[in-house]
Amino acid sequence: MAIVNLNLIDSSKFTHRFTSCEIVDLPHNSQLTIVRALGHSPSPRVFLATLTTTCTSPSNTLDLVVKLATNAAGMLDLHMEEWAYGKLKEMQGVSIPLCYGLFEGMIHGEDVKFLLLEYCVPDRFLITELDILEMQYQTMLALIKIHRKDLCYGKLLDSSHVIVQNGSSRILSLSKVRPYGPSCKDISRFYDDDGVKNAERQCWSRELVDTALHYELTERKRNRGYNFLHI
Image (cartoon, rainbow, N blue to C red; front, top):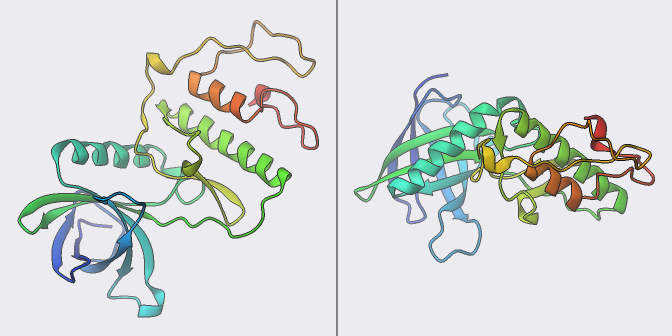
């Protein structure tokens, strides 16, 4: 692991030199080629790219996500997102994408930074009701882990932020994650397995409460018996 240089080839085939802002686990002088924009924004800032390294053959290239920023506010957001990935390192590649680091350089004379992330692709199969329940259960467990790191996720209930990859729930993008603060707190209570209100139950954050209610995971689920009272 080291501070590395990386060549970014844009959609016009121009090559730009970037350097990692911190120590990263990538080979020196790797090449990153922009493939296409992701999403439908007229001014895209998120792209699919292909990484090629000096120690791999073309058949072993890796698809990654490039999140670009060209102004101070956008760069600060990328720094915050990279910080969040660092706090959740043990979840990377399991519940959230792998983060390959933050890079800085110039494109056509303009200062640019980008965050390099794993490209997550949803499974292409029909999802049954039980599959959906399992996904919701895994997502809730991941959200609890995020909160145990004193972080709030943000807009998790936006359906585009959660996919199923290789049969497991994967939360995409930590762009809205922020340190846990007073606005995250809530005094909502849950019911025990018999439906009796337990006044001694510890309070959950507002985000956890809203997500559990949305997924209907505050009561014992028929078929699986998922219940978050004991987590």
